[in-house]
Length: 432
Image (cartoon, rainbow, N blue to C red):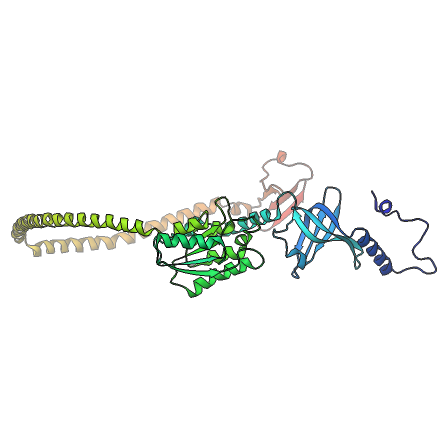
C-alpha cells in the first residue's frame, strides 16, 4: 500500500496557489502533523543498522528489512530503561510514533520502547554482560579464593526482612553458636537494589577488615526479582572485594552473574550457611581424632629418638675409623713428596719455556710474509676476473628492463622489449 492511497488524499484540493504559495516549513509542519496524528503509535520489527550512541545519551540508528530502511531515534530517557545492549545486526521489535525531522525533511520513527525479537530483553542482557565480563577475566577459576573453614566473623548482604536471612542465621547458630555475624541490610530487588548491594560490599571491605568471608544473596523469585544480582555494578563489586564472597541467590536452578564472579556459588542461602562454616560437633570430633593421632605420634617420636641415638653412636665409631685411615694415607703421600726435588723440576720447566718463547717469535715474521704474497696473488686474479675491467675495454651488459635477466642471444628479445645497457660508466635504455 503506497502512502497516497493509504491517506486517501483528495485530489481536488491543493495546498497553496501560484498567488499565495505556502513555505517549505509550513508544508513540513502539515506533513509532520498528519503523520503523527495517523501513526501516533506503531509497533514494527526490523534489524538495527548504523547504530550510534551519541555523547548526549541519545541513540541514532536505522531499522531495516530486505525491502526498506527507516531512520530511528531513541532519546536518553527512554533508552536508559532497556536492559540489553543495542548493536548493529540485532533484530528488534520497536514501539514508537512516526514523525518528521524538519531540518532535513526526513520522516523517522521516534522509539519509546524496544525489545529484542525472539529472545527476551533480560535474557539477552544477561548473555551480553556474561560474555563481556568473561572476556575481561572476571570468571577465571584461578583467581577464586578458598573459603576459610572456620571464619572468625561473617558478613551478610541481604534483605533484613526476607526468609533468606532467617534461614542463614538459624543454620549458623545451630552449626557454630557464638560466631560473630554482621548484617548489612539492603534492597534485593527493584530500582536502586543493585547499587545498594554493591555499596554494602564496598563498605564491608573498607570498614570491617576483621571479616573473613561475605555472603551476598536473597531467596528465590522470577528473573525480574533476581535481576539486581545480574547488574554489572554488583559483579564488579564482588570482583574487587578483598574478602572471599559466597553468592547465594535464589534456588538451585537459578544462576546469576554474581554466581559466576563470586569465589563460591551456593545453590541457596541455606546452603551458603552450611558451606561457610563447619559444625561445632564436627570440630570437636575432629579435634578428638587429632589428639589421638598426636599421642600416637609422640610415642613414635620417643622410639625414633632412641633409634637416632643408637645410629649416632655407630656413625661416630665408623667416622673415627675412617679419619684414622685417611691420616695414615696423608702421611704416606707426604713421605713420597719429599723424595722429589721441586726446585729441579721447576728449573727444567723454565728452560723449556725460554726455548719455546724464542721459537714463537720466529714464526710470525715468516707467516706474515707468506700471507702478503698470497694476498697479492689473489688481488691479481680478482682484477683479471672483475667484469668491470672487461667492460672498460668496450664491452657492456644488456638486460631486459622488466625481468632484469641478462640478454645472451637474439632469441631472448622480441619487438617492443625495453632494454637496459650497462656500460663501464653509466647506463642506456633502448627499445627493440
